Length: 594
Ligand code: F6R
Image (cartoon, rainbow, N blue to C red; front, side, top):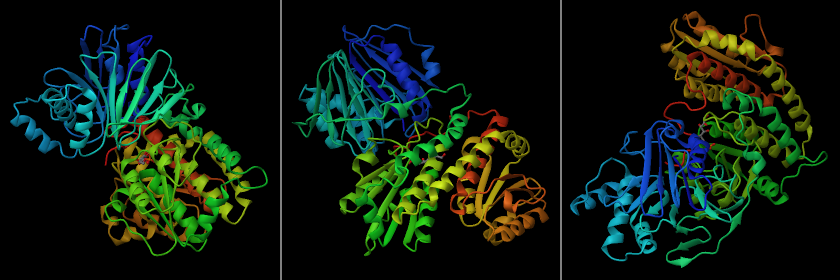
C-alpha cells in the first residue's frame, strides 16, 4: 500500500509529474498525500494534505523550480491520517526528506533509542523513525549518504521502498528497497522512480525493477545500484504498455468500466491460450501439473475465491487439491510428501501475504505457478512459471474483471491438461451470457433499489454457487458498507439463521440442477422467518418471482455470470448510497503490507 514517486534532473514540469504520478497511484491508498521539491539552492518546499491528490493539487503552484522531487499517497498503517503523519517526512535537523511504502517492524525499539539520543518526533509513523535514524547515522560518522543507507538497511526490520532527498545534494535522488515494490525509469534528461510503472510510462519505457536489498541513487544521467556496498548491474524489464491504459473511456466510475470490459478480457485470454486448434500453454508447465499429486492454491480476497474455483476444477479431475488464505498459510506452511505444485493467484502480483508464502515455497525449491495481471510484479519475477491474466489495468479497488479472468484462465488450464477443447465453445457462449447481462443491467439496478435499504444481507449457494456467494458478499460489503455474510445454503440452520428478521435480505444463487431444490428450501426457511428473499437463477431453473435469471452456461463456468450479476448489484447499491465506488473507505488496491 502507499504509492511513491520521485524524479531528478531536467523534468519539464515537476508539479505535473508528481501530481499526475500520485493520481495514477492513488488506488494504493488515499488517506493523505504530499510532495517535497528540492531546488539548487538546497531548499525544500514541502506540501501535504490529509485527503486525496486532488486536494493536494489545489495547494501546489503550477510550475515549481526544482532539481529533484518525491511524492507520496498514503494508506495509513502506523499513525492516523494527520498532517504530521503524512509523507514526505523530514528528519529533525532537516537534512533528509523521504517517502516510504512498507512497515518497519522494529520501529518501537528504534524510536526508544532516538528519544534517548535527544531526538524529538512530531508524528507517530515508523517512517519518521527511518528519516531520523538515517540522519543520525549520517551525522555520526560517515558523512556519506550511500554508506548511511547501507547501515540503515542493516538496522531496519520489515518492508520498505524508500525515496530519499538529501538537502546538500539536490541533483541526486536516493532509494532503498526491501519487500515493497520499487521501479526505476531511465530517460535522456532525467531519472524517475515509482511504486509501479503507471506514473512513469509517459516519461520513459526503460524500466529497472529494484530487487530486495538494493539501494543507490539516481541523477539526471546516472543510475547507481548497490547491494551490501557492491555495484549491481542494471537489468531492464518489459511492460505491456497497452494493458496499462487508465482512461475512463466515458464511464463515470472505473468499476463499471471494468465490469463491462470482462467479455473483452475473456476473448483476449481465448486468443492468448488457444490458437484455434491447440492450447498454447507451456508443455513443461502442463506436464508438471499432470504429474502433480497435490495442488495447493494460495491467495487473498477475491483471488482466494477464484482459487476455490480452481481447487474444485482439479478435484473434479480426481486430484487432491486445496486452497489456503495466504496470510494463514504463511504462518503454518504445510508441505506434503506427495508431488506438490503451488498455484499463487494475485491480480496485483504484489500482495505481501502472498509474497511471503512464495518466499517460503522458493526456499524449499518447490514449483510455484503465478497467475497474475501484473507483468514484472514480484510474484511474476519470483515464480517458476507465470500465466498472465491479460485483463488490463484494474483501477477500481473492488476487483471485478480480474476475478472472471482468473476463473477463465483456470478453466482453460485445466482443460489443456487433457486437451479438452469443449471449453472454448463454452467460453464463447459465456461471453454472450455476459453481454446479455450487460444489456439487462437496468433490472439489476432496480433490484439494487430495494436491496440498499437493508442493513444485513446474506448470500447463500451450494457448490460453486457458494463460492459465488462468498465473492458476492465481499463485493457488497467492501463498496456499500452494508454488513454482509455468505454461507453454504445448508449451514444457515446450524446457527446463522438466528440473525434473520424482517430487516434481513437473503440472496440465493441457483445455477445447479443438483442443488436447486435444496437451495430454494433454504431460502424458504429464511422467508418463513420474515426475511426477504431474492433468488438469482439460471433460466433452466428459473421460477416465477425470482429476482433475476441468466441464460444457460456450462455448469463449471456458472460461477462467472453469478458473480457478474453480483458485481453489478454491489455497484448499483453503492450508487444508491452515493459513496465513492472506486475508492471505498479504509481500503487500497495493492496490499503490500502484511
Ligand atoms: C476485493 C479485492 C481484494 C483483493 C485482495 C487480493 O475486491 O480487491 O480482496 O482481491 O486484496 O489482491 P490481489 O489479487 O492483488 O493479490
